Image 1 (cartoon, one colour):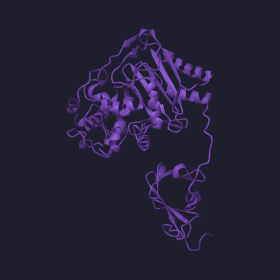
Image 2: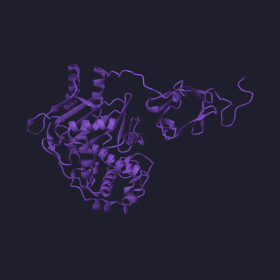
Image 3: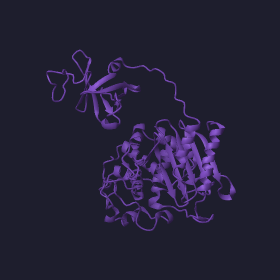
Image 4: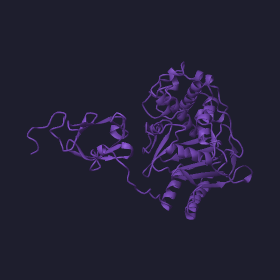
Length: 451
């Protein structure tokens, strides 16, 4: 683990100690990452036998499990075995919710009920998938598909079964072979192994504990079955931020991190992509997930921009403040702000250098900048308006990556002499001078010109 300053480590430990004491959690562990690497581990409280937890102590991670299931689904998509617009019925016939799409299930916009039928699934032994699907009815749908974000544990149970049917193996075995083993996450399991923290409920008005049950959730396991350690979750934080080609194409992971819905609270700071929770925090766009099961709370975040990350786990049913994780990121940034890598020049295609500089959409000035790898970025000069990045394609065009032009095609239209005449961006014409009369401006340009 990389070294940080003693004062920084003390400030981080103090924040964890305050949370463990004030939230009255039997134990609390946390890890902070910088540039994709763990730089600090801290723990407070004790686990069974009075020992302090370590980075190898297992805790139940609850709904963080969903992020692994989502990766398995996206692997199926990348292999051409399904599309995100497929209705569930194409892969799992004979359910009353077969019209919802794979993308809607991943993004919690399918409109399904949050919980499965029967008693609270998190505290009872789980039913098998045939029993679960057989218990679904028309009441399983609570909202029109696509209408709104509505978190659904049931939806991820169905996605886990989707993976199992395609791979002809239990979803957990698939996760082990396709994700956990390639990443070296050998201490992430479906049932606990020693050493592990036992889960407790803390009495609201007295300092006493009540053990919480632990069980196999059966068909609901893909919604929250896994146990993990700080060491393994640090690897997962790095994956969420940086990816790993052994598991998933980077472009697919970036697609999963795109916002598909928002949590409709008073302030929209939390959203969801495809199986991944998103959080805006002080200029950061964090990707990860929270998790809770009876006796346990957990959270993991990774920042794709700089590889920063954080995770926390506690063996308590409730009480942990959700801000503790981001507080740790803030403390590291305040005490040891990251130093940018040195700038260095890179080679550029002369034909692309010609494209850089000012362009005009009508009277509005934009700047085109050349990015590494022949990519481009177009931004308004005054900072107000549509800004997008574009990825170079083999056919000589560029594909919009974000903003208003995400998914749209940018073309350079050249004059007879080969010079760049104008840019065509999905019917928007960008010219070197405002309303260039020599360019095919839609609607034409007044012949009298500017006056």
